[in-house]
Length: 375
Image (cartoon, rainbow, N blue to C red):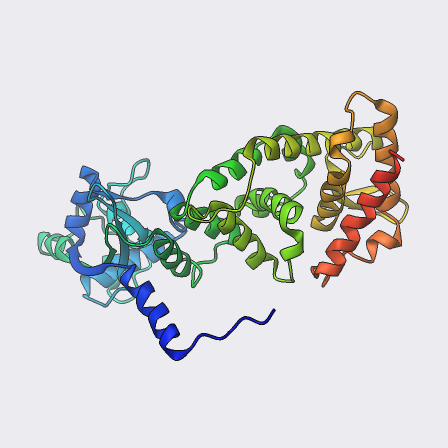
């Protein structure tokens, strides 16, 4: 059905309604004020709620140099809580650089300036050995704070933070999701994080690279499992947008998608316990979700396509799998072994195979053959 296009009056009303849901104000704070607020607990800085702090010492030093030279800096963004405290939602690097230079970052020595390229005489200086006039100048340096006030629409707060955190820093999409989704609800996010530590799941995906792991790819794989398992019919082509939309849907406090946490956890844990057992039976071990050579020798190369095909294909029979039935498990393992070199499956894997038809093909391949074990 084609959706009716809104009239001009309706469109204007829709925009005005959203504007009224967000109450904002701007305040200029000195960095000394922000440091005092942080120390007293009036300014909450949660690194998990922020971009990962990745500035090098040179970048932090050049930021301090910018403050001393009164160069313009971008604003920070805060949310006012019910207790009238402020939560920092964008600006971690700037405030942390100031605190680090002041020696107020727990577990780190005070920053020693380096790579300052405008006033090179600053290099090698700490806050303690700056001239007093420059110490005062630095403390009185200010930054504009844009504050989303108490009582604003929580979903507008969520979208504000989401857009702030998808524009410049090289975060993975899962890092962005982890940070932003808590503005709607953090229940599903915590659920995903907890399941990423499941021993069987962790063993099955242990061949992902350390870089991928650092960027929360393990958590994205948990999300991918539930999103495709429960809403595959909504998938078109862009996986990142699809996963974000599913996570938003489950987490939306006003109109959440149906999600039975207890039942879904049981299904997830059993699925990867089964897959791990199949890997043991085949002698693949933790390479069970990787590619194989033409002769069937497993490689230490994790494949998201094999992950999707096997894990999602199992859902058709997961309630019938008996972990104590060795004969049944051996038959399921044989399905996996054959599938990994079968062109009927392999044609739906590889570059450019993220479309919905290829996804349905690789999942359907294993679903049909796993089901055949029980016929």
